[in-house]
Amino acid sequence: MSQQQFENFTASSLYCEKCKVAMPVRERLLLILPDKEIYDYLCTGCASSVGSREVTAGEKLMAESLKGRRPGRTASAPRIQL
Image (cartoon, rainbow, N blue to C red; front, side, top):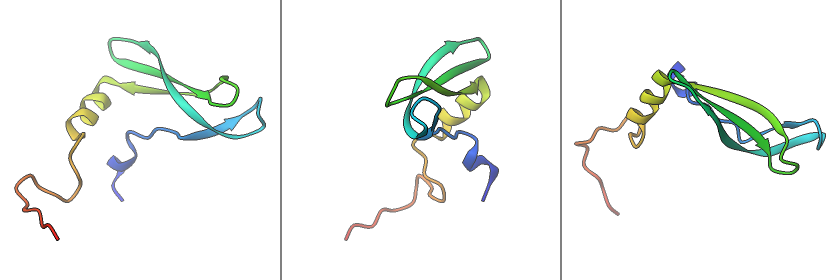
């Protein structure tokens, strides 16, 4: 596995202290700074903050450039329909 696979990791569930169980979370943009963006993870059960994530400007540019590209596939590869 390459390290690049895990650079843009987002959580789908985290442990919530109020609910006392791992709960699904939603990500909310909390703060935009010149060099990074800070996201807050909110519990879908009680809406309390259960974590955060920072995305640097470089990571964001990399994610945008890779968006829509599938690993191991080139743009000129023919598609086969069955």
